[in-house]
Length: 358
Figure (cartoon, rainbow, N blue to C red):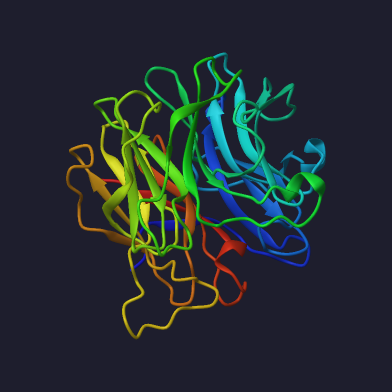
């Protein structure tokens, strides 16, 4: 049984071939913004893509038609994606996304707007002090700590170095975790002292697509998707400068990212795909094993969790890249990819679901 109800569904058509990977933000006038990546030409990750946005003035019940907020052309590339939205200390809207420079250089930029995304007056290279390479950040991943520090979680994929020359570069899909931080509200960014390397062999993914949540103690709890049957976790006790070795968490998972958010009450919510690929079960070519989508909550800062509740579980579909937002009428908005056989890939369709909380 599905949990909550759909309030928006963005499906591919003859013009827009994929809608995916978004983020929410409360606007200054009280409305909600949801912005996401909209693709043309094809559904795969490197197809042309811009960032578009829509607005809700009734706490996520209805949404305006999407309009372009950031164009790939303004970055000098064909593809921008994987958006995080932040409220900056001076009131600016901050938009962090990947800009893909062919063939395999991924840059990450913070764009600042003083007029709620109508125009952007500054763009900052978040990886200026990290180096050029293939760095991946997921949507809705950048967080602000209680100290004010910004944390940008990255997966770094090694390259053979041909990317600079314009040749086809070889990319190692076994990623390691790189953590970048800013102590001046995003004006400059530095890499953490530690890189988190995979603690296992026989993997094709390594530690991919990291996310992070700040615990009530101030410790940071990072998590990664892997092909080892679990989300792997790592911790930092000093604001993200140093990290423990990665280890399996309690969250079983296929190669699919997990999302986590904290309610104002202190309760943690996790949304992920538990392992569905038991022996004998067919794996959908469109869903990629990313079903069901479930949620659980913790009232003791992650020490224990409620039994998972199913959000969606339609056979053949895949649910992933979830953005979470708590509304003023005590509900959770979850936006996630939800494609299936009709779309040909789970990444092509985007759903927004409103779930009433206890």
